[in-house]
Image (cartoon, rainbow, N blue to C red):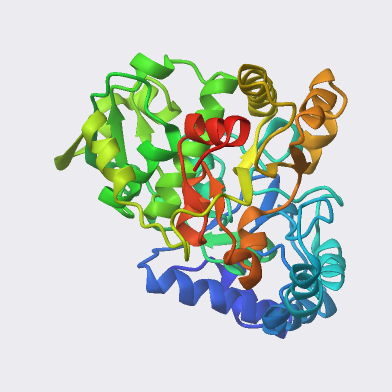
Length: 424
């Protein structure tokens, strides 16, 4: 790998032993993926995936302290993934004991470390850091050092920024050094599609289900998707961006997609069109039957498949302001139709802290509260990592949460039916 004199000097120890280790880590990482050089990180802010003070992550906390002690702090302010705990989210005595004593006992001290390293502010915790209210929305063409998979795929695809699917810790390393290895999705060639996805459904496909189907088919490759302008149009409105947020998260978790192009919609597809598709690209046709096949083949890993759900999570990744408003209206309508006053399944909507604050200023906050739905900034995945919570029959419309936990997936319409009208 070619290094500039400045980069070589850092590697040789010109800025101290700790910075030399940071640069060596980045060089080894780049060489493993065939990087030809380092390129500057150009975004204003970074984003870290490691936001949780999990007791077993002591080596991470030790590493962070070494960086702090050496003054090797982030060159950028950064946001981080969601907090794992919220006292407002239902949990019994034993579950809380596990959360606070055996799992996330280092949360407070770790957040203090993050503040010293460069955390944007005390509310900068969300997997959807790119939401307008969060203040960390990269510009087209900017080079990032992110690791959160759902944020990486959104930044690459919807915003046109450039970022590889890095691992945790590599994100802070790139931010500290100010450079990342040049390979993969940072290159023009690496951003070309090797799959042509033809969507031929008779109705607007569920974002999480469509993303799941594509992710499982293409895995880490780049797909070019045609046929969605019929359902989404050609402009990145708030509703469309919310759809793409959930769609991308499913491609990234059910597969390993870091970038997708959607014809006539995402920025690079609008500019370059089908020239983004490599010669010999494979074709995958998705119709109603294919989406049904995908959903029917999700495993149900509850101990009792017929159990009544005890908890519902909506918002993985975090919900946007528009989604909170739409869901509030939908829950109200569902309850009115069924004659129920409050949701029949304890339900948690999750969103970014800054979005939550803005939402609470609107009339919708009281309306949502009246339905019995809890609004939280929590990470549902971190909640479900509690083995006692993992044994519960939890339902969700998030394919990311379904993939990484024991939660059972249903479409948004099915979730709405269950929480407002009941039934298995």
